Structure formats: structure tokens, C-alpha cells
Image (cartoon, rainbow, N blue to C red):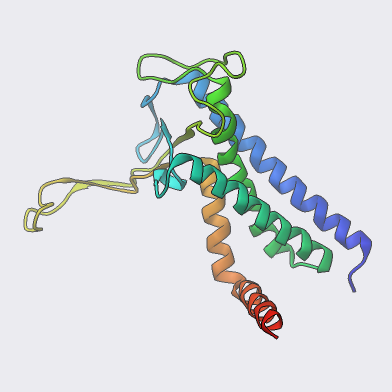
Length: 218
């Protein structure tokens, strides 16, 4: 039976998860941004590097739409998922489902912070210059146009394509080549876990949409 105490506990759990992920994500980004030059790379192991890059796009450096549209999309997505999570907490929610949704929200919010504010409060990073904080509003980009800081690089396999492969034969091949950040990792883990373990809950969202649509038609 759902109680107010249950609702409060789940609400605080969601807040703690989101807050912890945001803190870790921003702490890593601030350290990299203020301690490394753009494209600088530091080897941790043979298969793990801290490689500082910035991007205008989505997770793992993808870019599918203009920068301002992507920032607005992030705001809408966070608001939608946050509202959905709040409703589920009030109705009763599996802890695992709550954790996954919180990870996705926190990851999206972590990258949104970069887009909204980093351009306002940081100097521009270059291969020859380590950025520092500047007076708010005097940074390298206007509001909503900041670049996302990425740093984790895992070249697990570094080799070349066999010569017999057309076009790419003899070319270098790296697996896994994308550079990403902690927020990206949280989004990816949260989404994969949702698809693997909570497809029934996800399907209820679609069923709910269809029921509302049919009620509206009536």
C-alpha cells in the first residue's frame, strides 16, 4: 500500500541521485576545463585516456540540429521526463525504474548546464590556452550557446582494417572511438537499463497516450 512516507522517500531518492550525478559531472568538467588545454590528452592506462574536447552536439559528439534548437530540446525533454517521474512517484514507482529515470534526467541536465552557462562564465579553451573563469556574461559564447565538455576516451582496440576491405583497407581502426562525459554515460546506462528491464512500464506510457487520444475523439 502506497503511503505518504513512501512517496517522500522515493522523492528524496530521486533528488539525491540527480544531485549526486550533477555534482560529479560538473566537478569533472570544471577540473578538465580549467586544468587542460583543448585537445590535450593524458594517458591513464593503455586503454583509457582523459582527452579534453568540446562539442556543440548531443551525446558522444553527435550533431543532429542547430545548437539553440538542441538546447531547447534538452529543456523540453528534462521538463517532460521530470514531470513524468514526479507523477510516477506520487502513484508508486519501482525503485529501479526511479533510478533509471533519475539518471537520464541528471545526465541531460548536466549537459544542459554546459550549454546554458559555460559560454557565459568561461574563457574559450584553445590548444594553446587553458581556460579560466571570467566575469559572468563576458565568456566565449552567449546564453544557450555554450559547448559541452567531454573527456573520457576508451580506445579498447587500436588496429588497422585488413587490406582486402574495399575503401577502408589499411586505414586505422579504433574501438571505442567516441569521447564522452559522465553525463553521457549516465544517460546511456539509464536508457539501456530501461529498455532491458522496464519495457512494461515504458509500454504503459504509449498505452496511456492512446487512451487519451481515443477519449478526445469521443
